[in-house]
Length: 151
Image 1: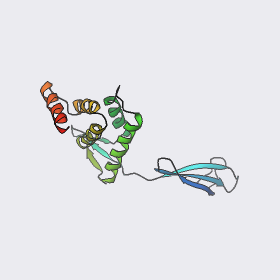
Image 2: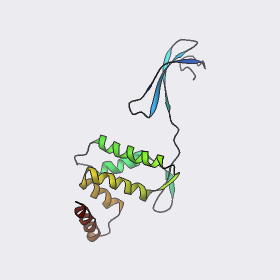
Image 3: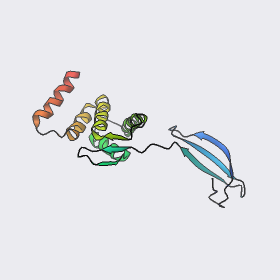
């Protein structure tokens, strides 16, 4: 690891510990030449994930797009940003653990709806109305009836 102060390539690890999220390791290093300390982070290299959209085009998975959609659905609802981030974390964990390199947006949308249904029903209906693109009031009512029947 190159020292950010003197550009020397040798350093020793002084301290090593996992980050709060447990997704990476924080390492305190000391340069062998100038003796200054600096911090590095080590994380697992993730498999790139491609999302196949409804129209057939492909794009790289984007966590912020998923979180933005959930935030919109939960707007003015009693759902904390922590709960929303936890939903995204769980979905990402499932996606990356599946070892699939390509996933359909439909599959991701269904995962979001399953999670939102357990957190806030109004947010679930909001997300479903955009995701499923309800054409008229009857299809919207059918979805509400399914939700009520499950209760």
